[in-house]
Length: 320
Image (cartoon, rainbow, N blue to C red; front, top):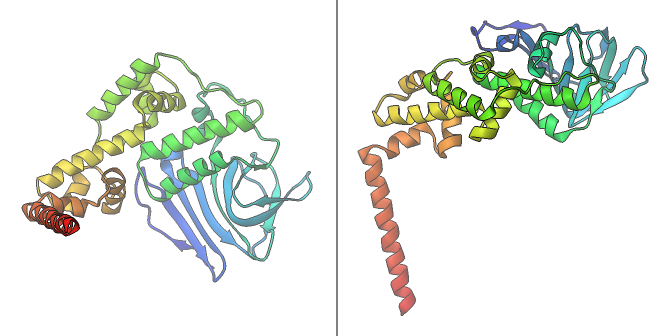
């Protein structure tokens, strides 16, 4: 169970620090520099017991399966069950272990108070909101967190990782934290959304960050995301990815190799392009490339003619 070191994958991409594994236990940790060097954890434990410890940041996560037995210095025992959120304020000493022989699988991240303030739209105060409870049963927030964690793990764009994280933090703290800071809601949403839309069109191939869009909109980061989504119908990161898919289609029609299309359309790698391309068009880039060639069009025509003949034959037999 010695840690295995991994290579730094570069700026605006998560840096995988180490991986531990045994026959029953696994642990993956990475640092996402897009989110202010925030640490992410994905782990499954069965026998491991955490001794008393604390975090200088918030510890926020979900239990995906099983359950974790948990105790703080001043509170009685509790179990964090599957499909719930777990939240721990900075500085709280706690211990933990599996609640049963099956162990538990969980995802965590450790956002700084600075990241919390940014997500809540207020960076001018030292007030830190906190939580009374450590277990929150909120299915929608559970799914929000699971997705933001996955997009960091999958190296999706900086804009998507920021957007999902800011919206989750805002929703979590406003709904469940005490003395939560309210996001700033200033400015004309319609005009702001239009400015952001034009900015994304002008910089579709760049690694956009939410603070850039916030400055263009004249709104707080989280309000920029929400107002754009309301006015345009999808969040900024989704809009940028859709533009990249459209650019990729145009390049494929020019018969460029898919490796070159990947780079020219500003995707991280070919698997990322394939993932988004298929979601938007219902087919892979390779299938699209084939179908837009002469050979592909001939195949489509042949299939259509064949289907017509079958239909005519069937129709004819039905009349007798």
